[in-house]
Amino acid sequence: MAATATASSFNLPVASVLLVLLLCLQSGGGQKKKENMLAEKVDQMMEWSSRRSVIRMNGDKFRRFVKAPPRNYSVIVMFTALQPQRQCSVCRQANEEYQVLANSWRYSSAFSNKLFFTVVDYDEGADVFQQLNMNSAPTFMHFPAKGKPKRADTFDLQRIGFASEQLAKWIADRTDVQIRVFRPPNYSGTIALALLVSLVGGLLYLRRNNLEFIYNKTGWAMAALCVVFAMTSGQMWNHIRGPPYAHKNPQNGQVSYIHGSSQAQFVAESHIILLLNAAITMGMVLLNEAATSKGDVGKRRIICLVGLGLVVFFFSFLLSIFRSKYHGYPYSFLIK
Image (tube, rainbow, N blue to C red):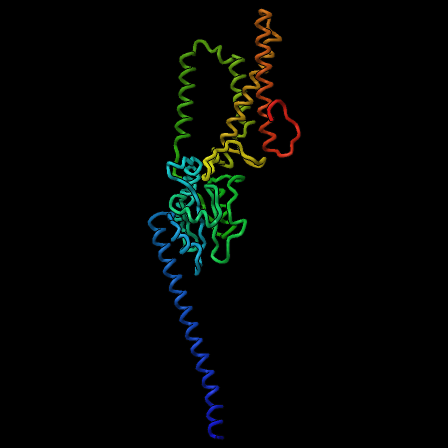
């Protein structure tokens, strides 16, 4: 019995050592399998990226290469709706800027397998939209190499716009990857300026013997008003921020031309404000004309009423837009 007890006491440590070795082998095998899986995913992403800068993904690819571990790379995903039947003009505009940014990264000397650009179209991955509870497009999200996306990993498109430079700055904040944006040469502005100079030069040459029109106060006043309307309607803000023209909800197809926040605007909104300001100005000009002209009294009265109607109606419309953006503003006039 003593021999049996000794054998048992000897076998117990041996069994423990064997068990530890077995667990280590299994752990090592699992780690090796994970490394192989990660290498396959990175190689596949690099292959796709070599073909096109923005990788198109459906639901299965998104879940495997973006959501599922292991992953040691960050992914920028644009959720959009580019099919013609969706009639999402802002999606096409955002896609153009996104392509510029992705190409700038793909063909830069700093390109690596640490960051990839992908796109999920609603008609190719509606299940992804449902999984993320997403009801608007376009939307840009960053999926970090480790952990889940945070609130700051969703790009604030409504406030910042979707210009490539703004997207690059956001990516640098989230990934520490610096992307220098390279835009393809665009000579349309140079051509338009050359045509304008040629037109003005030709007009001055043809009228070289009679340049009195240069001193026309009405013409200069109209030109000055055009500049004022453009600046007060937010055209410079549009040029800097690059906001979308309008917003279309992909769920119900409703198009919004007025942004609901005081911190942002749509391009269509600035056009509406420009027209309202022009109509109010026209009303004020008619009122001034009715007061200062010396024509028929009945005609002056009609001009006065038309001018007053323009000022009252379009100022009320302008004030209602202001109230819709600055929530809680208490005053209104005619139109609420």
